Image (cartoon, rainbow, N blue to C red; front, side, top):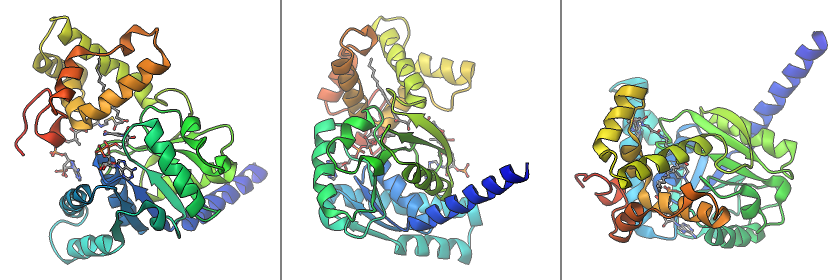
Length: 309
Ligand SMILES: CCCCCCCCCCCCCC(=O)CC(=O)SCCNC(=O)CCNC(=O)[C@H](O)C(C)(C)COP(=O)(O)OP(=O)(O)OC[C@H]1O[C@@H](n2cnc3c(N)ncnc32)[C@H](O)[C@@H]1OP(=O)(O)O
Ligand SMILES: NC(=O)C1=CN([C@@H]2O[C@H](COP(=O)(O)OP(=O)(O)OC[C@H]3O[C@@H](n4cnc5c(N)ncnc54)[C@H](O)[C@@H]3O)[C@@H](O)[C@H]2O)C=CC1
């Protein structure tokens, strides 16, 4: 028992040391997820650089972060000086850039949250691998792509893993920490300790399709779309049914609009390519139509539903 307690103390001390080791965080991608991850990292005392190839996306992310931090501050401190200080100190730790390579030069951790496309992610990581210091840990926030396939673009498989956050990042408590066979224990422990320092509850995941949550959630969403395509129910009735009958905070169509239908299409296209014989992953005419019309959900003003811009 004493030996066990000693071990627990030692591993707690090690975890704390590792959380402290990650001070400088670079988040690549300033869309829905990148902005949320950068915000929470800044809120929890990290020095953060948020990068996007698109300067317009950076500007939009800054506005979303300012709005979200105010809501977090209000919830934590109410109105007043403490809330104002929390907002200004958090924002002072956040820088932005459009130059990914330059932004990793002093990073302890790089979290990638760019579009859900394997080729684009590999091209990015390949460039970053040459520019980042040897100790830097690389992580992807991918929803559906195997971490091992992304990591192939680098020479740091032992310092590579998945950090899969949930939308909206400032609110959702879960973080899936994904390891590939080559991920070292030090890297895995450092990612987990950092997740806890971010205020998240972590779960350990193997590099299996969809990890834990999306392995269950995505087929549920697919099935909801198929029901509507078969004319069995309307999106609104499916949403009402799942909220009132199963206690979900959002119905599947509201959630798909919230996540982004373009991201949903990237996921289904990728899984259809990898598993061509699994019928549920075959292309959805309804989803194809909405995405081709630029209806990407809340972020574009329309998806399955219409939103005020
Ligand atoms: C056949 C083909 C089909 C193909 C389809 C394929 C689709 C594939 C999709 C794949 C998806 C993959 C995504 C992924 O990898 C993982 C995910 O992230 S899944 C999504 C997980 N998220 C959820 O499930 C969210 C569920 N919704 C909710 O929990 C709530 O609705 C939500 C918190 C979003 C909003 O709550 P609500 O009560 O409705 O609204 P309020 O505005 O009142 O907010 C409540 C509370 O929370 C605070 N808050 C909300 N948003 C923010 C924010 N951005 N920042 C800060 N704070 C926020 C708000 O202030 C409120 O606080 P109070 O103190 O309670 O007032
Ligand atoms: N939307 C969601 O609810 C969730 C998404 N994810 C994953 O997070 C990642 C990002 O998703 P979202 O934030 O929703 O996407 P998004 O479409 O909102 O943002 C992606 C951003 O990446 C930028 N980008 C594209 N290529 C880039 C490059 N080479 N370098 C720098 N920036 C680049 C784009 O300009 C855009 O601003 C995806 O892998 C997605 O699967 C994970 C959890 C939830």
